[in-house]
Length: 359
Image 1: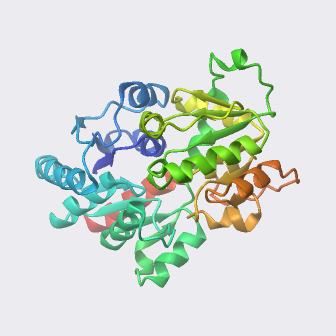
Image 2 (image 1 turned 180 degrees about the vertical axis):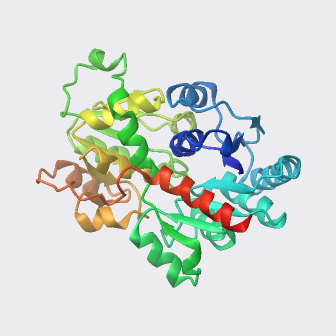
């Protein structure tokens, strides 16, 4: 069985790492062709992920990025179509909800190549988000849908997706956290900040709905300041550039640091007091590490975390941000909401079984 895997953003590197490892355990019976679109590429941010996560170097790097959503998606489809014709894969495997995901799925469906979508069925119900469009369209043209939760399954069923296509396998991000937890690395600069473990908040901000709005960013920083808690903020280059353009002042309690590798991020997540983020993946990682999460969005795809009371949606309201970060209640993180840490193995077994039936 030959699988062509399309990735383009750092969260997808993490997901692909555990599935690629599961592929490798089957030896020569599975060949994986790894394609990096280049959607999010920066040597400091991308190369370290391949090294830390022990991901095979991509067989192809398309170096496509920096344009608009339409430009990037169109260029990716063109290049991916060429590769698929050349490689003749049995499956095209895509992850999540990026432009790379949609491009891979569209290129494959036009060539009548079966598509497998990991992290299927997520919905924010906000069609203004490009990620929402990407995930909905990918789900509806995919051959096999690997849903992380029962909630995701219900979304797909409500949209009329055939039940024979859907498989609830858990979340591969859970696999990754279990596998890499013992390898977490304290950042070399941490001790120099004079902070104590479990006495600081970890914050990430990268979504366009926040970074492209000076008003929202100003309100978010005001909320972080009102929280009266030391905060570590790894800042994406794009976000740093936006802040410079808008001349927003960084509050004194916020320690801005360079982007982190996955193992350093894992250490900070495990050793912080709470997490404040607009990232979907980091919301889940907070749960895996037993940390309360304050979500800097107006909605979330991971509604089960909100239902459990471990995730609070605050948007960009300074008062809600500060209030949520000051909460000090005992929370329950015991339920395996995202599977048993064997999601990747289940995905590979299902692909092999389906391929053997079709052969």
